[in-house]
Image (tube, rainbow, N blue to C red; front, side):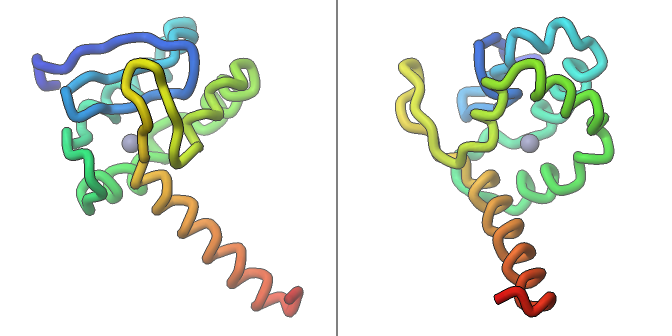
Length: 124
Ligand SMILES: [Zn+2]
């Protein structure tokens, strides 16, 4: 892991990497050591690039197997503010408006799959 990375804790979302090399984690993750560890490892492998880029997208698409899904679901269920993670655009006092391009790409992929499913099943 890059020594320049700084980890700070917040009340919402799950985990994010910012261009200044900061990793922000939901403070409740401290109670889930294995999840905490795998999320830091995941964020550490992201680039500091703000704009949409292939490397970060591929990294996100290849990670779900590494992060224990059931543990993640349990965490989200117990800490509903973690759902902020799935908002493509959000606002924080500290960083202003944040646009998460990988998140937008994720929603686009999901929307296309849902649409194809509906067309395939002759629903629409
Ligand atoms: Zn990621």
